Image (cartoon, rainbow, N blue to C red; front, top):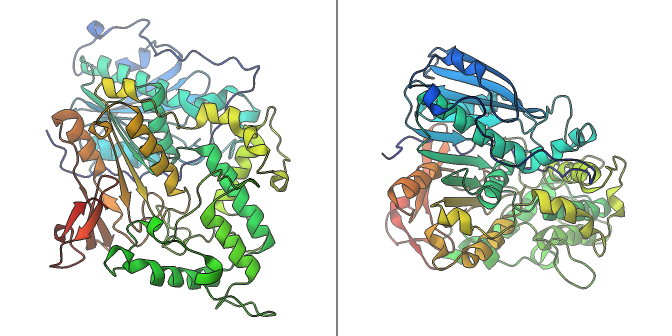
Length: 531
């Protein structure tokens, strides 16, 4: 049965990092949780919710259950909360009217968000409305007590849990609980999250291909370590030449004037920014000697901005990681609404301040890259010729770069990735590069099980100037359960409750092209075609 209503894919904050244990840490078993005292035969459908408080499952050290009455449009459900070794808090909500499916959401940033946080509750509640059993986890630490990546200081195991273990064990445990409660196994399992949550979903397909039948990874943080190197590169460049919001607004106008019509339509959207090459010192006005105002860039500022577009390079001219895309310089904020374009995210709001990207990267370097952690590490010491290898150990644990998805595919798994071309938190090309490699590496007709949908003008997870709302989770479900591969997904821009523009999102590398008649703000007047 097709899921008609939208299940939000924009519930999670920006993706971000975790790290691995110290070499002397002894990780817990990665084996799937098993039932040690109960079997499905011990229960029957509609068993009393309170009975679940007596469960005895692998690694389960605490469990509580309570029946939550229907309220505020959320149906009555059994809420089971617990703790897995060592400190992995989880919740699974079990609706009275169950559709047979399991749905799990992930975490943003360095995770550690409480399972009763508004964001997690909203994600599970929306799934409950549609009849899904829904779960979430804090990934093994409490960010209120251990902010950023500092959790590694109290127990190196928490790094492994954050990297991948907590999601896997929560999924296995939650599905076991659902099967016991309902007296039958889960029919289909789905993952849907953005940013770091996208990374978590990608790692599930790579490391634990049996956990989920369908995965929606929005703006996945595929390469955390590459992102970290890129953020340090940008900060070092901006230390030399700070840039103001006024200058970025001016540059954004210059870029749009040059790039907008390249796709054949002047509509305020750049459908593929790779088709517009920016040379900052030529495409933006340079300040005369002795002048520095928002109408121009100094040569040093032009150089710093060019470095952000180009991404980090070593002295041999080899690109270490992609940069950010033309058209993202001043787009409206993404899912949180706290920043505009590069300001506050890539570029500090004022000299001496720290941007969001840099804070995440700096925390990752200090706490996660080193053994033992080096909380006083100075990012200005990072050498782009020799130091990228400092992140290799963490990369092997936390990066979602493994392109071997053959087991996931063989099990019938389906994967949809989305990315905004105007993302200012995660470089869009990390997603494009991964997809291009993976779709070729997993046998013939790789698009039969995975597809990428790029969103022109969209910022991180949402926001921006492009149509940023879509129902890709229904596309995943239809693909898994009915074998209907998505040929396009309609995206909408919604302002004050009104749809102001819609466009089809096309499976990469296809792009949407106007057919020449009708409104350019209506999806029905566009077709997906080869670029």
